[in-house]
Image (cartoon, rainbow, N blue to C red; front, side, top):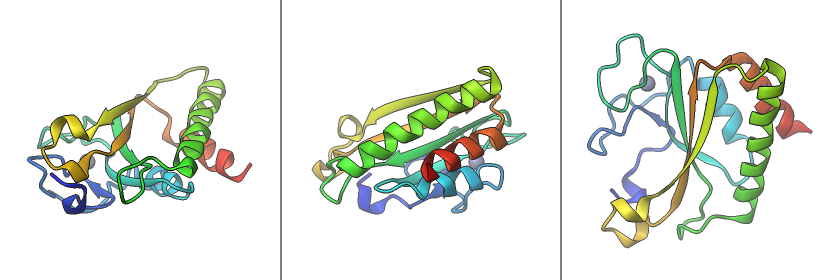
Length: 148
Ligand SMILES: [Zn+2]
């Protein structure tokens, strides 16, 4: 699965690398759009959660994930991207403060090179996973941190 063939900002696509639905779930759309406003950041997949998940990449209703790419076209993370990732981390911290730590947000660092024979796909990407998160508060935290 090379980076070029991955659909951009496409929901629920991680089934055999195929695009299943092709649009962002309504219940995560504003958070995905807010993340994409950070410089050097591009979301490459997401799922906002479903009452009845149909495929393995779909999350249950109380969970979500957003896959984030901070690399340039050569698969190298950009300075801008790292900087934005730091700001996103601070936004998550502010979310925890605002909600007294309600729910759970985890950021995972994944290395595509380990699952990919294509040398061009050696980009590191990041996934934000949420469970029982107040999405309105998270959206505000992400937006406020970008504008501050
Ligand atoms: Zn979904």
